[in-house]
Image 1 (cartoon, rainbow, N blue to C red):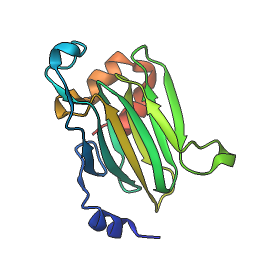
Image 2 (cartoon, rainbow, N blue to C red):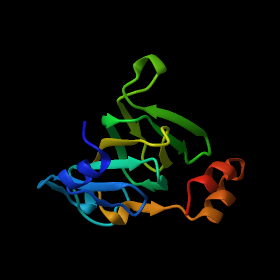
Image 3 (cartoon, helix red, strand yellow):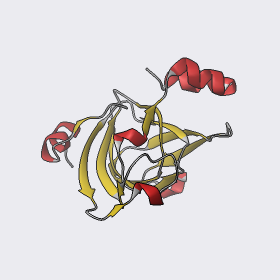
Length: 166
């Protein structure tokens, strides 16, 4: 098994603004015109995009949301604890990993417009996943949470929001 440092180098991963590391691995050449997309999309998008995403135990993926459904595919490493808050304010926690006897799932879809954050459960670990979105990702679709604003919107989740915002 590779170390996190070896995987970062081998896969040419870069720091991600939400935390962790990433590398775009696919961007469809087929595009969808902006006029054919819902209003939250400001312009044309690729049909689909994929990234590698590595999360390490020394950081977290901060609360953020995107305009697309986002599929997470577990590849290797330790369990990811994914925290979600729906637009209506419902909190849920999903375990992404390969320990099926502990109800972990190797694949999970985060619905569009849900706030989500993630952490590694093992204090010395990391996980490598793939994330796929359709229509394709554009940083114009990405919103990193501002702590006080998100806490004001969801005061009953203030503690978890504080833990996973910068």
